Length: 448
Ligand SMILES: [Fe+2]
Image (cartoon, rainbow, N blue to C red; front, side, top):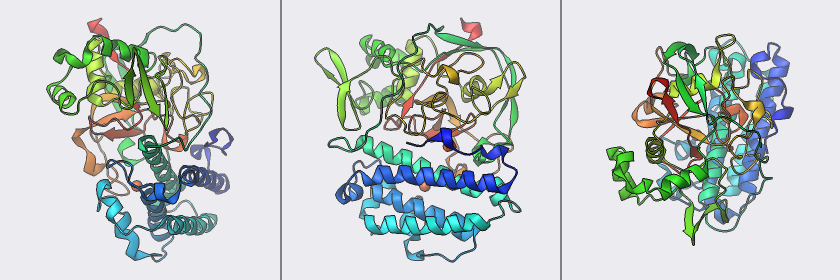
């Protein structure tokens, strides 16, 4: 859906404001095209219904996208007065939990669309005159980039709502590329030593990705690809869900309380596993990365396999460190933007690609699909980097730091390129599995 291949040059290469304005406009338009595709394919009843208590009605996301854009770009950057101050509290994500949002007097679909459209028109006008420098919020177009990422993040959230929505399919997309028939080692070696984690230079990076800092790690081995459905089925068939040896005490308690027996959306029929994917029931494809597992399941699988989840630092070193230069790069393949042959991003497909796909996206160590396909659970809690500074608002990450959240890395097929890079950090509760989450495993070299 989002055609990253045809975007103008990446923001970091832009020094002249005109290409940067073009890039910003292209990102805003790409996000809006995706928002429209996700909301125009269902009727008003579907837009206002709450399909799961875990999610907002789609119409809430739609107006919230416009409201945040108005707040940050028209008011904070442009100095304009509020367009409809009375609706601000309705669309403040911290004021109303998702489960309560259907009871609010939300804008109906036609009005939500008109509001977001009106904001966008004024923002594009503002962009033509904005100096894109002079204050930190405007430096290299940061606030515009933040808003493009925000909309794409809500598009991912809306895609999750589509996955949870009952009824027939409303979305379609071509299948991902066929599996790469080449032979690959099961794991790659990442040698010990220091690397630079986080960034000071990525212009649209968010506060929790900063600052850059050196981290030294012992050598480890990492799965070449995410864990596949076929491998995960072996864990199930071996009684993995019924053996407390593989689970943390909290995970074991949760497994029983929540009745976990397989990834979310799976069901057994006869001797085989089926899954429901965006309104279609189909056999579980063995060669795809496993999807919709929680951290506890990922952690239990890793222990059953005699391994462990990688730490967040290990994941980032595998994805960014270039042993030839000692430098950390933007992506596993280098500094160039994601393209359709490097990573499965941007809802181009409605599922992950088979494990081992995207040879052009391989890291120097030989790992594949670190970017795109499935979010990868790591062993790590969501914590600030040394020297972290909350910016431009405390509620983006600062209020979430702590041991109750686990970090996920790498983005999924549902994540847009603008909201995905080697430094990007996602976080969620260890029980979450409606998200597009999978994992790969690691082992310390001295344990092999
Ligand atoms: Fe938001």
